[in-house]
Length: 385
Ligand SMILES: Nc1ncnc2c1ncn2[C@@H]1O[C@H](COP(=O)(O)OP(=O)(O)O)[C@@H](O)[C@H]1O
Ligand SMILES: [Mg+2]
Image (cartoon, rainbow, N blue to C red):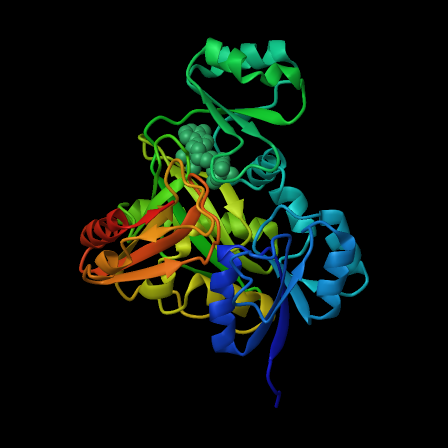
C-alpha cells in the first residue's frame, strides 16, 4: 500500500513538454516539482512546486533532488557533471545522466550510432577552415553544417547552398571546434519513432509519425499518424529506432528522428531522450500518451499500450513574425474550436516571440489526410502576437 503521491518526481526544465508531463502525472498520482529559470515558465501554473534556478546550477539541482524521489528532464541541455555527481550521491536520475554525454554532442551521438551499426547520414569533422571547404567540395552542395552542441528547433543547423554561403557562415573561425559537416539529403521525409524502455528492459514502440517541416525555420510544423510509409519502410523504421534506443541502454522515453531518402533509405538523424513534438498526437490518438509513457518508464511502472486508436494529426501554433505581446495576444480560439474533431492545447506562455511554440492543435479523423486538413483549418484561425 502507498499513499499520495505515489512518486515525487523532479523535472529539470519547465517548458511545454514538462507541462504536458504534469497533466499525465496528476492522473498517475505522481507529484511534480520543476526547476526552471523563468518564474513564468509554461509549467509554473501547473507544477506542484517550481524552483526558480538555472538548469545547470548544482545548488538548484540539489534542492530539486532533496525534495523528490527521482529526477528526469524535459530538455537535454543540462549539466552532465552536476547530474552525475548527484547520481553518485544516490539520487535516482532517469534517463541516466551519462547518456547525455552521448546525446548532447550531435557528433558523438552520430559516431555512437554508427559504431552500433545504426545507419546515419554521411558526416565528417573538418579540422580547419581549409579542410571544411575541401570536404564540402567533396560532399557537394548544398551541404549541412551542424553545431555539435546546444542546437534545437533548427538553431545550429545551416544549409549552405554554395561555397560563398559556406564562407559567409564564418565557421572556419572555429577550426576543429564546434561544427561538423553532413551530407545534405534532398527531398527527404522525416518520420519519427518513439520508443520507451522500462526498468525491466521491456520496450514499447509507437507507430511511426510523419513530420512536416517549416521550409525556412527547419522547425517541425505538423505531424500525421499513420505516417505515409509503406508497411516495409514502417517496419524498417521501427527496427532501426529500437536498435538505436537499445544501443543507449537506458531507461526512459526516446524519440528517434529519421530521414527517409528519395532512394528509400532510412537513416537516423538524432535522438531526443524525452517526449517529443512529433508525439503530441499520442495524447488523443494512442492508448497511452507519450507523456504517461515517459512517466511509466522513469517511475519503474509497467509500460502502457502504444496502440493507435485513430488516425490523427497535429499542427504547431507558432507566434507570428513581429510578435512580442506581453501578455501574448491570442485570437481565433472560438473559430478554431468550431472545427470538427479538433483539440486545442495552449502552453500558457506569457510572452510571444516570433516563431515561439505557443501551443498545438490535434485532430482525429478517418484518415491522416483528413485529420491534417482539419488541424490546419483550426490552426489557420489562430494568431499569437
Ligand atoms: N543532412 C540533412 N539533410 C537534409 N535536411 C537536414 C539534414 N540535417 C538536418 N536537416 C533539416 O534540419 C532540421 C533540423 O536538424 P536537426 O539536426 O534535427 O536539428 P535540431 O536539433 O534543430 O532538431 C531537420 O529536421 C531537417 O529538416
Ligand atoms: Mg531534430
